Amino acid sequence: MPDLYEVLQVESKASSSEIKKAYRKLALKYHPDKVSEEDREEAEIKFKEISSAYEVLIDEGRREEYDLYGTTDGSGGVPNFSGDPFEAFNSGQEYGAEDFFNFFDGFGGQPQGAPKVNRTEDAQLDVKITLEDLYNGKTIKITSTRNIICTHCQGTGAKKKAVHKKCGRCDGEGTVRKIRRVGPGLVTQDFTDCTSCKGTGKIYRTKDKCKTCEGDKTIEETKILEFEILKGSPSTDTIVLEHESDEYPGKETGDVRLTYDCQEHAVFERKGDDLYTKYKIPLADALCGFTKNMVKHLDGRVISVPIPKGKVIRPGDYIKLKNEGMPIKNQSKSWFGSSNKNGDLYIEMEIEFPQDNWFLEKNDIFKVKNLFPNELLNKNDINKQRIDENSSSEANIDMVTDFSIVQEKNLPEYQSNDDNDDDDAYRYGKDTGAGPQAECTTQ
Image (tube, rainbow, N blue to C red):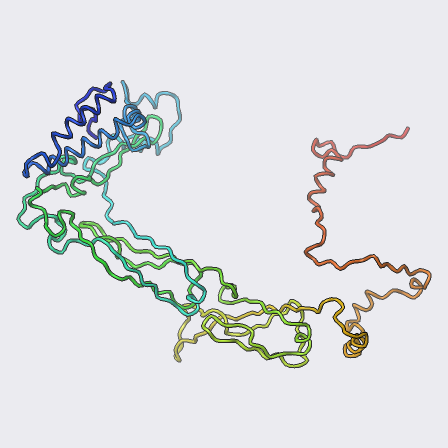
């Protein structure tokens, strides 16, 4: 990195007003519009250097960092060594093998710079899709505008017979070095593409630039990208279109990555390849059977289920419809073609019981009691609840009328055994290791 004070031709102790004055003077001198056509390219490079130096030195924070570390990348750079550069290692502080490697790599390093980044950045897209999209499959079409290598100059940025000059900023290397601090007294060096020559080490005069790309080496291309989401795909996934990102000469073209996420569905819940939903019926249907259109499926079909008469549906029961779940992705094919199997659809049945005092006449209660069994079917349940005759004498029966019916969600909450253990530990002195303590002593 060039000395920023030398670039602006000021002393290191210059005030802000002196820096502003020097910048205005040099900016007028090297402004590209103030020079001849032949000198414009060099003037542009010099003008950028002056502007970059001014942006650092006019900012108190960045100027202080530059004076202290010699860098402006915000990570802290090389300290101003005085005397023995190994002084930091002689201070008694411990360092690992990686610290020593970074130290010598920072000062020795590779004389011609580190390997360049040989790939353009990937483009990332994020979209929301529906469960219907995953069930039926979907193709997402997106209009993409990207940079491709100029078809006229083939990525050189100049006319065919143009003569290039060596870039003055990177000395024709195509990269510039940045010093980065990695520890107390330890530095390493990073290499980035030169912004003046864009990593080529060559610059051309303005009149020699390609008229199609204006020296940028790339032009814009607009095309439609298609991302196919197959039936039964997972709820969240990334689809990659290789080499569809920006192009640039000398670099491998990056990818376009589309990451999709399935939104929550109002009716169905997906679990693996199976689907779950809920359906509520009145008590009469649960006891007598029914035929109902129970759900509209993800492909638009209406699913009707016939429950035969006499088949009792109980709270917590599920109706399992085989092969009505999500399509199974990547199915193996047999001699007869794809099996086209799906997961299953589970319908959780909820029973709606009648409200209190549902009967119109007392005779309705007797009719129901006559229709249904009045005794339990399981003998174990009968024996568990049976009270012997000696305990159930009329004098021993207490009729409790102060009661209410409470749902499970309204039951009281209780402390766990773990919470009680803490109280016991305190009471018995376990926190001091003394063991149980006697409360009194007999004489």
